[in-house]
Image (cartoon, rainbow, N blue to C red):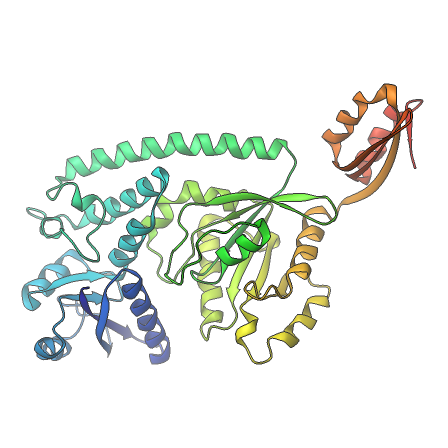
Length: 420
């Protein structure tokens, strides 16, 4: 296991507490990547040092600790320039990576599907391309440990042209996959069954909630970004209505723009959803900041607040958690308090989902003469049939349908059936 020290700098009016929280999150990222954090350094400066990112005094302090801490890699909390990389590695004699490269590395570890792997490789290449200088120092050192997985293992010396060619090829492949995904999405749309997407900060409990609602048993991990490849399943409501639910990758502060661009085809699932469940770890001290980070990402990918329910999860970890369930009875479809682990508040969540998705639908009982059974299929196009029974020469169905659509359908019933 690699030994790493983490380094952060905050400037201007940024509060120290905010910088410490960001550094704590960086530590979680390093651990998730498979390394051990043996030291942490934080500095306040008027402005970033263009040569070393940190001040030369702080750099000397880190180097003085090198023998004691025996670290092999330094991880910086912000994006470094190519010059800063070169200067720092020359000065320290150890591997240097930044937060962006670390997150890309974690994604490279987690990707399982062909699409996921291509998206991660695209993001890594987009990140590396502007950093290629001279003979490509940043690429020639790739060979193992955190911050080095992905395309660097295949070829150590990418020329700019070859990287651009590879980027173009990946984009073509992703475009083909995106078209296929679009066809699947269109097929789901034609079924009238609405789509619900889970979104939220990484480790907010999305996969636990997905497993509960979809009656699945996918691996739940404490590691960040444990879900990269979207999963889609059907959830059946007690009323007989149903919806699709999709689990997606978690968001994080300072999410690399390369990842947002590379994963845009996957994020389209979220953009096209009828409803988004924004899952929030309400037990986290940083939950307010995390909400803001997710909302910023929502804006980047074009999601409006009007189709979002804030799902405050993990209330079992709070002293007054159980009492928060009383808030669920309030007529607010914008928020709900739950514990996916303890299954608290899940019925309230399902009720709110049903109300948002199907509030314009009414339940009708319709009777047909058996000889006109083919008309049932016509009605199924207009609404959701949840029950069908045949008694003697009559067919009786329960159907959820919009009132205005039922009014349009009534003339077709004349002499063939009736609404009970």
